[in-house]
Length: 302
Figure (spheres, rainbow, N blue to C red):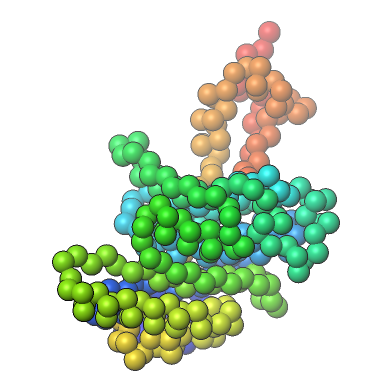
């Protein structure tokens, strides 16, 4: 069994693993400092921050299960107090995220009752893989009809992709800030197998799913507990293989140059509506960075 990160290492990572001979693979995600950094860039209430942290962990697990070169985006949109949440992750491991919400409506919901249905209402969850202009974008959409984000994703895989998958997600705020964790299992498709082999595979999947469900929130969130220790506890009897982990970091892709390109594409009327005291002020929704430009750089003066 290969070792991943050293014991006690609190870095943010995605740990791939597979269960030998059973056609099951998975990802264990732990986000600590980077999750806290993304959340603290905005003044989120705890209910919104927790939901966004869960979404970051889920996005990391899903993105790591794909082969892509570009950007993976997980987005929710609803008619409740939380209107929109977006998390994206590049194939290089750079993550960012933000939420749009009604502050007063969120505050009116007790934290213990701040479930996904109460916060988001009716809406949808969308997955998008964008590999650039040379390829078609892939997008999958499922209704927000589950009690949790992980339930919604589970429904998507079962209904749209016809793949068996399981998820467990946790997030909380402690002395060191916000943390999030997730574990994902995916059953690999099998072809031309005998009835007996299919029954054995079914039993192995059910066993792996039950073992995954036994993973506690503490195990997912405790930065002092190595990923290898968790995976060995869960799956050691079945021969779990653990390669090197993948690193992730909080990093926004906004820049002054990118904002300038957007402003140049706007009409003079749109720019005039944006100006404040002779300046155009643009704030990144993800990282809250502000970019100021003289309006005279874009709007012709009479």
